[in-house]
Every structure is written in structure tokens, then in C-alpha cells.
Amino acid sequence: MKSFSFPPISSINSTILILGTMPGTKSLELNQYYGHNQNNFWKFLFTIFSKDFSNDYEIKKAFLLQNKIALWDVLQHCDRVGSLDSAIKNEIANDFETFLKQHPNIKTILFNGQKAAHFFKKYVKLEDPYQLITLPSTSPANASKPLQSKLEEWKIIRTL
Image (cartoon, rainbow, N blue to C red; front, side, top):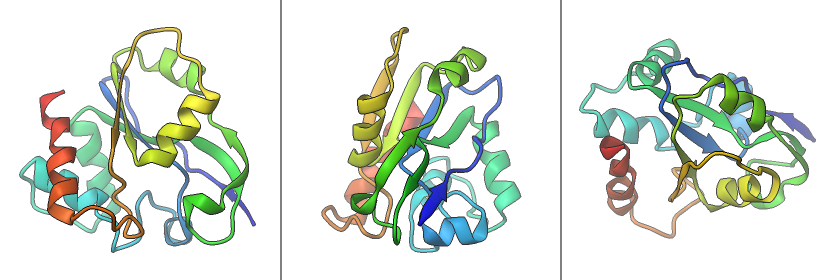
């Protein structure tokens, strides 16, 4: 099944770009980044920034922009059955050359999981120096680390 990513959530003021691989089935169904209620992405960010969690997607998007965070996926589209990154085939990357030129304040790129970093490094050639940081996936499929350990690694976002 062909899957397409969402447009980025970003502003000219964004200094950090968080990249996932590709929206999962539930996210596509809801038309929301990290829409699966078991994915810890939003819970982590609200916790790290000491904000009360909200299920309202408009509040989530505004929260990112208030904290100068842009959100996107590495892949523009791919073939995939289900939500696992390991099932991705025939992938095409998003246009990062144009995006990064339009967002000159971004200096740090965070990857939500190893697979996002893998695809980015495979398809994207950066001309300017960026700080690239791979964090543990917030997906419920990533059970290799305890939740608290993943949250601790994600706290680096406060220092950027």
C-alpha cells in the first residue's frame, strides 16, 4: 500500500527539526503526526517542557511552534503494509534541500529512531553543518529500552 507523509509543521523561527520515518497506519487514519495513543512522542515533549498534556492536535502543533520545533518525516512516500519501519519499500525522501533553505534557523536535526536516521543519511546530502542526534524511537514497537530511559535521552531537546 502506498503511504504519503504529511506536510511539515514548521515556522521560520524553528531552530530544531524532529524527523520521523513515515506516519503509521493510525496516524494516517487520523491525519496527525504520532496519532497512535500508545506512541509516546507527544507525552515526552509535554513532559520535557513541563506542560500539561493535551489530546487536541491544534494545541500540540502550536506547542511545537512555541518551542521553535519543526516536525516532519524523512520519507515523502513509500510502499508499506502496516506501520513497521522494517516493512518500508520503494521509499522516496522529502526535499530537505529546499526545506532547510526555507528554515535557516534550524541548526539541529533530531531523529525519532534509528530508521529515520538511516533513511536520512541514505538520501540527504547536507551542505551546511547541522548537529544530527539520533534518539530512541517513541513508537510502542520499540520495546528495547525502558520508557523512562527513552524519556531521559529525549530530554536533550531542552539543552538545544
